[in-house]
Amino acid sequence: MKLTRDCLITGDGETLCNGQGGTLKFYLNDLETPDLLDKEIKQNDKILIKFTS
Image (tube, rainbow, N blue to C red):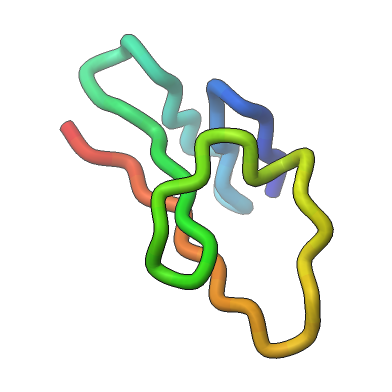
């Protein structure tokens, strides 16, 4: 699996990117957090990565 601000590449090679029929969004503890990849993830934090088309 690989993750950037704009793309998620799954373990089976599926590529999900912003602007390619959908939007990639990041959530930290139920709050949308566009800069999630720059945040320190602490114990018991909940992360959600969502691709919607």
